[in-house]
Length: 114
Length: 115
Image 1 (cartoon, chains in turn purple, yellow):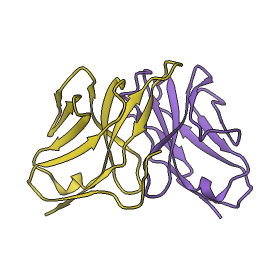
Image 2 (cartoon, helix red, strand yellow):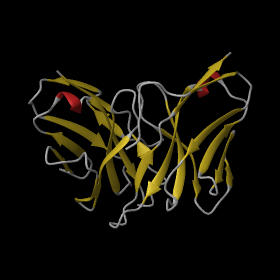
Image 3 (spheres, each protein chain N blue to C red):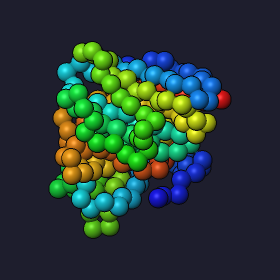
């Protein structure tokens, strides 16, 4: 069964450093997303991406964050100047359409900022 | 915003029982309501969805009921198995002006199934 894959599964970084989280969406999907989940809390939307541009973003997704599709398969989330409160599980997701009811999530990248 | 914390509502059942997990939603304009299962350390896994113009939808061992009058969604799991133990989230799709839907998740319910 096709799946969304994410790397790394866990990253520890020092406060102020930049991190890049990588994702390979399901191959025939055209819509890509990043969500995050702070420990013990609900999953929150960060950003959606379609046709090589951001289609929607939340208030969380400020200038500290950026996304990119550098080639035909990868989708990345860059977090600049990380803060302690950026520690969370970051989920990449993809879907075939934009209706939002068939979004498939990866296993997540656990980011710990120390 | 909503007040969320570390303690999830928990439903404990015996293997073989039927489980009912409930969710209240706030946005009457949502197109779809979806249930996700999240096992420890993993990403949300799609279980079943229901369109806003439907009341009931059945899948394999699962049924989702939508009551728009009281803005209530439920997930029924028949013959619950230990492998069903996980946190279950309801989510609703919202379509902002851009037209690209996003998911808004609820707080989650932990289901514990004992053999």
